Image (cartoon, rainbow, N blue to C red; front, side, top):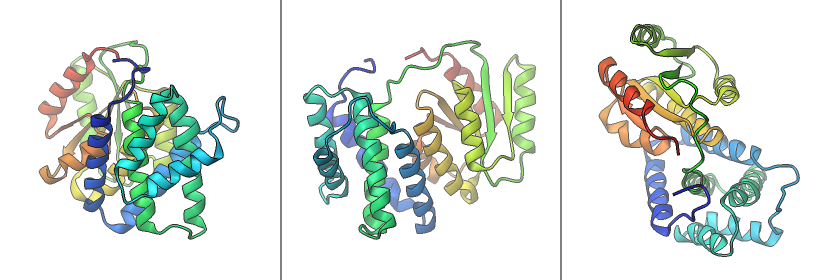
Length: 268
């Protein structure tokens, strides 16, 4: 499958089900931050003058579908657009990104509720990830190269620094980004577009910040592969995967083995 292949209805619905299920696992304040993150990141991808602008009536219809009680409505809209020959990048940039901007305006104007926005945002994220899952991976410069980061707000970064040093003795080229705020960290990653990103997390206390970071990375650089490692509660593994992690590892040896495996995955 390549980036121009149409996405199946089964794939879209599976992604929508997973994201909507995860919505119930975060507290309201974390959901509010996450919703704002998705709306801003997706809307930012819309060019000021899209090469193929979507008709206003279709943006209105897409917003209605995203807010609908019928979960199938949004995926049906995308599938119908694909059937009409609209390319996936156009659906992402001229439809979903513009709809995200419109929904953000509606939220600011209190025309939609917080619950409605979180439902719509989850659907946008699921659709965007499904459509962009075949984005080509950046050219392979050095297979055993990765960027390790700490979750914003984490004070204890000694563990990830030590892991980086141990991996360097095994022949890895590890770039560290520690102690950065959320936006600065995402901007640094977006500027370098690493193929492999390792995120060090510290259990439930960092789950909300971790989820926000995963969403931002997947929206900003969908081709990057992400490994989350550290003190992970087994109950949170599904949530972490749904949010954007490609793999989760507990302990250094497991993380090193998983990083090695991911470094040999074929380029999409």
